[in-house]
Image (cartoon, rainbow, N blue to C red; front, side, top):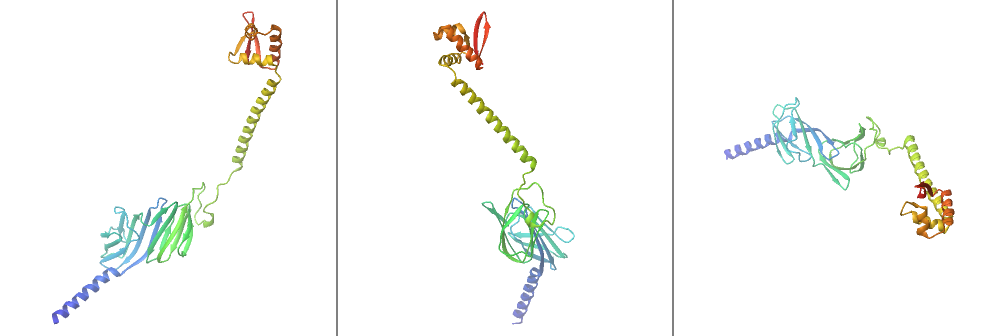
Length: 283
């Protein structure tokens, strides 16, 4: 009977000490820095007083991107099972845990969702040029630092939805109000003048071409049938002797001469002396 009492007392002591080693750790703060790609850098600062400390991480970290040190920056041994970390904290007063993870942020159709659950206050820094769309709870603090939104969230589970806006040319300065983080691009006077100049040049070119074709059509409408016949004859050839025109078109020489003189006045042809003959050429 006494043996059983001693055994139960011994088990009680062991269980009490074991539980004390895992539960007597105080989580001071959590810092989450989210990049534009959705990769989050998470830092836990934990005050410990025991040989072994158990810490629940926010998400499963990338295995080879975990740093666990004490208050002096000395590495601390640990084991990790999914999101549960057990660190050997004998002689350690403060534990610093830093890791990278893709398990906090998710993007769906251009909208980013950051979902967190913690037992302490959590500082979240969103990517640059972010615009918050929805928050499931009201943050304790909200400010802009170096063009990025910083949130201080209370303990609990919550969700923050945001979009990343296109980059602007001028980056906002530190402590700038959130409402001025993004402003639409402004059209300068120099850009406006250049656009007006290009538009004016296009209008002048179009007007010049229209005027040229109108004058050409008008001058062609004044031509006689013989003159039009001569032009149609010259087009595939580019030029011909006056005697050939008379011969091929079977027209009187005087009629051809008058028609050629009228075409010369209208600036449609030119006549040159080649081998003592008149050579007619289109302009």
